[in-house]
Amino acid sequence: MNRRAAGVCPAGSYTRCTGGLPVTDMTIGVLEIEMRIPGVSSLKGKRMVVKSLKDRIRNKFNVSVSEVSHHSSWQSCLLGIAHVSTARSFTNRVLSEVLNFIQSCREIELVDFEMSLL
Image (cartoon, rainbow, N blue to C red; front, side, top):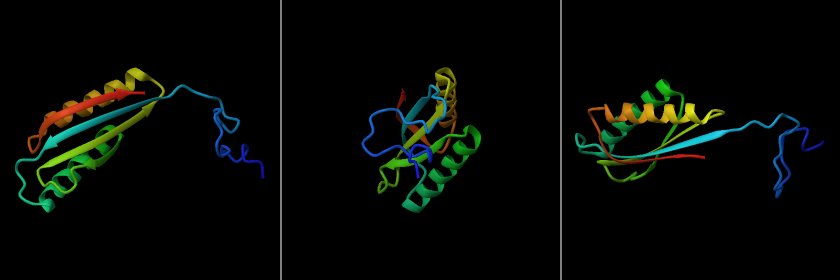
């Protein structure tokens, strides 16, 4: 079987493998949100708040969301949010809207954020 025809790039390949498909420009946006959750007193309470927030973000903005740090701290959370599109301006707008949405949530306090477009 031809590996390229199957859509699999050979290991160690430094060239762009497209499997015969046209190459398109791609923008990857990453938003890191550090937050405090002052109204919880246990990890179970934190999990409920964070899960609800992640689900609302995913459903409203069609982005990937994951808790990436502070797993053992019951009042702190670091979320990683990613968005991929072919338009840099669209990715920037989506992540800005996610940030505004998080800032409007009453159950959390935004401590810090960082947005990167690749």
